[in-house]
Image (cartoon, rainbow, N blue to C red; front, side, top):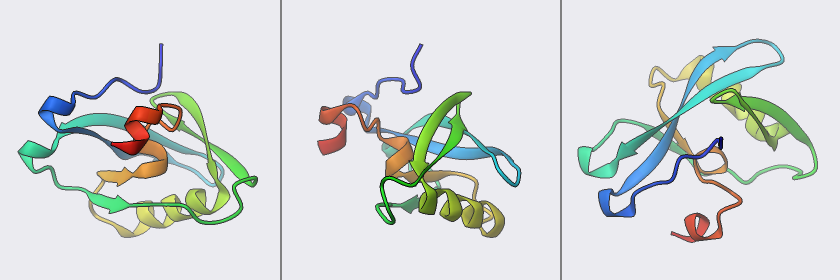
Length: 104
C-alpha cells in the first residue's frame, strides 16, 4: 500500500490535502484526488523554504511523511487561519519520489 494513488493526467487530476487533526506536536492530513476540470476550491502553497535537513513528521492518510520544519510551522498557520480546508501543497500533494509526476 502506498501513500500516493496514481493520477490520471487525461482527467487533469491533482491531489488536495485537508487537515483531519492538529495537536501541539502532530498534524494529521488526508489526500484526495480532484479533477481540475471540476474547478475545485482550494488554496495553493508552493513550498521550498528552510533547511532541508531539519525535518518533522506528519501523517498523511495514516502514513508518516517527512516535511521541513518550516513547512510544519506553515501548516499550523494554515490550519488556524484559513476557512478553506483544501490545499494544494507541492511538497505533500506531489509524490516527490516520482520523477515524472514532479516535472508534469
